[in-house]
Structures are given as structure tokens and as C-alpha cells.
Length: 102
Image (cartoon, rainbow, N blue to C red; front, side, top):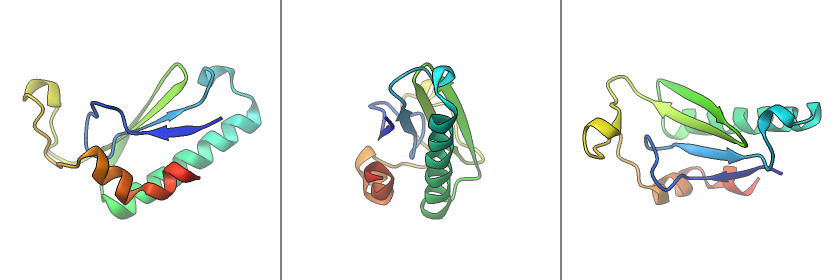
């Protein structure tokens, strides 16, 4: 049911997308529990590996986006793709690989 992916154009280093297979608001109670547990594991892994100062989490249909944030990071749309905390998608998968397989 749940899959984890790095979006092709992440907002920030460490931006992950959980895909649920159906709209989040249509999930059963047990599916919501599984989703919450997965979100908690990802947040813990990112706190340990990336040390962000906070997170933005938003739901878009059947996707939950988890975006780590740091003081002073910028909206990349305004600065031509510059990232304050530069991480490639490959770096994110290497650092958080366990979360892609569980």
C-alpha cells in the first residue's frame, strides 16, 4: 500500500513522498495507523541523519509530502534551484535507504 519516493524536483534536500494508493481521506483506520507509523519512522530517520530544524508535511490526494526545513532555507523557485542544504536524490536514498525498503 505505501511506497516512498524522492520527487524528481524536491523542494529541499530530504523531501520524500509517501504514496498511499488511494486518497488519504479514504484510508481505513488501520491504513491511517500504518501511514502514521511510516511518517514517524521517516521523521526519526531524517532527524538523525539530516538534523533539520523542522518539517513541512502536506497531503495532496494520495500523496503525503515530508519536507525537512532549516532556518534560512529558501523557496527554490525564487532562486533558480539553489538549495541551502544541498543533497542530491541519490544522497537522500543512500542516507535514508532503510525507509525505502520497509
